[in-house]
Image: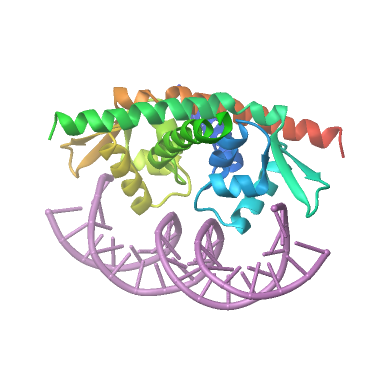
Length: 121
Length: 121
DNA sequence: CGGCATCCGTGAAGATACTG
DNA sequence: CAGTATCTTCACGGATGCCG
């Protein structure tokens, strides 16, 4: 049946693929971090200040994940005391489309909520 | 300074927007559900079978969220016993791009992991 | 069948303090 | 400054049972 196996195959694969990218950029902070790095090389401290609400523990943890997935490059500067910079790798830039689209959709959605409130209720 | 206020404004807005869409399609299950509905109208039970691992509690909860955000339409069929169908609204279809992109990226990423394993190590 | 209420375990994430 | 270790808290979500 066209609806049985075929559906299963397509849909399973699709859900799996979406899951895979969720595993990489999901979670509470990763996309925000990437959004900032999208603007350029940034120091750890700078990141912590900009991702308001995040603790150093979470930040370094998330950064390590991103680094292990090859999205982010970590550079230790030999200042005193030590300083670390993070930046997007070319592979990390691969996500710009997705993040950009999410950003656009978010804006529209927020606008929609406002419009709905004005009229509807 | 070009780096101070300007950055802050742009970046804050961008993070906020991304956050907004994360609030809508984030979480463990929502995107998977949408991925299935992307294929067409589906019964509750059918959904639960296809989103493997989800319990009825989570499923109905997630569906309610999606419905409240106007992404999904809920239709009660007067069969006996009652049956419920869910489908994407036009607004829900708005997300196809994002989900589609995530799917594409996920496939490439998985491929990359395989390639990396072959060569690198 | 769809959905809700309840109870409960677990893991994610916050706070704090410490090291190099 | 960057990162780690430890403790604690809490909400996400699983299991179960009931009701319309």
